[in-house]
Image 1 (cartoon, rainbow, N blue to C red):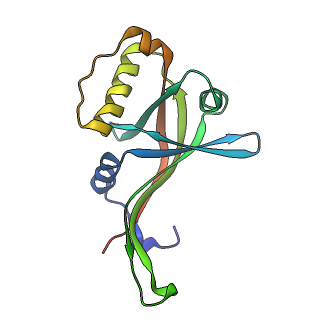
Image 2: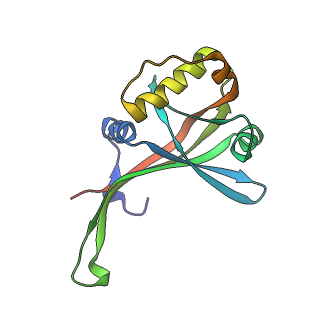
Length: 157
């Protein structure tokens, strides 16, 4: 990281940021192209591991790429605030972001699917307990992204 003075290393601060935000951008490699898709996510932290869950259709580009290439990049950003300046070069912004890489897989286990969807709903709504119709579970793809490397950066005033 070029600006090491902006690096956040406190794990609790990073986790707090991840749990406050709601959009995760996942970057897939697709035969020489990069395909980035924003998704609502849920995050679970287990034994020092960070797991992101998101959902989608059981068809389409995201679904196909998840099965073809498990290595992905990801990004979360937030806390943005424009800091006005007197001239064009003195404008700046407050922000915080997390970037990293990980391994993606499709979740097949029914219990883990419910757990992952519960994490997504808790992140989006604050409510953890939901009922899931069996037919809906069959038609919904649930993805788990296990973080391998991650860094956090912030400019907060």
